[in-house]
Length: 441
Ligand SMILES: [Zn+2]
Image 1 (cartoon, helix red, strand yellow):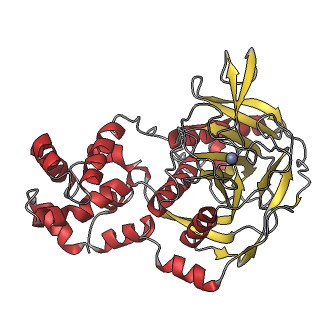
Image 2 (cartoon, helix red, strand yellow):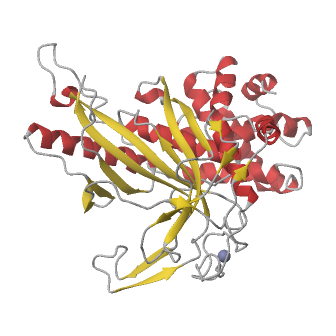
Image 3 (cartoon, rainbow, N blue to C red):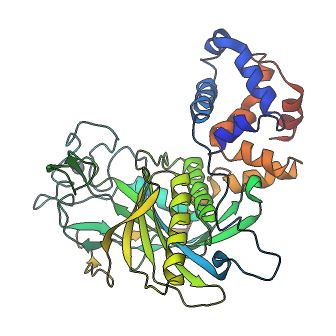
């Protein structure tokens, strides 16, 4: 997310010089440095900055955030209400094999190339837990400052769907791997800035389902036939459930962006929303300001970018406020964000809670962790985005520069290893970078 801003805000400390110098080096010198440690990461960084610079920036205004108050006499409609927003995020882990079998967990293979009796749910096949999944869960839990369960377990979540061959999903129900954490967010300066802390209720481990491919349409409705691809069945996920503490589309998008940065910094997922490696379902309800009781919540699915998430929430806030103003009832339902028409549409109504008939997974033992394992994992965590921002800020950088330099792990890596490349006389040293690099460990 920071990358497009990186070019746009190139007048910030160091960044313009850094990229101008890098561009001026030309391909010859870059090739010469290719064997040096980290050189490929630098070139990747520049490539990613170049490609991300084409990304569409977020909308300039958010309706409710920028709603101007009248001269004191009248309240606008939007001022009377507030949104209550919670997010459930599925993070697909970048482990080399699936959660409970040794099939490769890679994206983009031929359909049904990465399957075996376990992930196809054949009778008699038994799951074996991948230790890397537990390690990722503990890392993310610690990064979220959550309590890690020394003993947790897996449960079966029963439901029927053609992409779920076993008829149940292995998940965690009453004892998740991590509980009660939070995410600290710095809102972008161009939107008024400010710090926010949003609670995280829980993080639990589970497996993904397969994927249905609908012929003639990307959805079941309107398609002529459907096929199932089980490559994704059994791929490990961490589900991160937030507290319903966000109030605007911007806050929700920034929460999700910070979670994406965290999983990337931790190296547990590529967090790529377009490939479905990070999927966010947003629950949103509206209530008159000052009221404690929640309104009827609507779930929005199918958002594959932060800007889509922000726009979907703002559309849904407007839609629900208009309904309340007309004295209508909000229907509890799941809605989809349609990028083409820029609106949410009803997918299915959702009366009451689904009964998944959870029970403990009998084929897997409890997950038992030692305090020593947790302490070692904590000691080996990398510096996380929020800590990096605080450190850059303490060096005297403006918040705008801090966000540009710290929020993209590639850009940050480039800045931090720049002094090493200079000392090897591989690249020239711009003055601003010298000043900055001298202060960075
Ligand atoms: Zn398998």
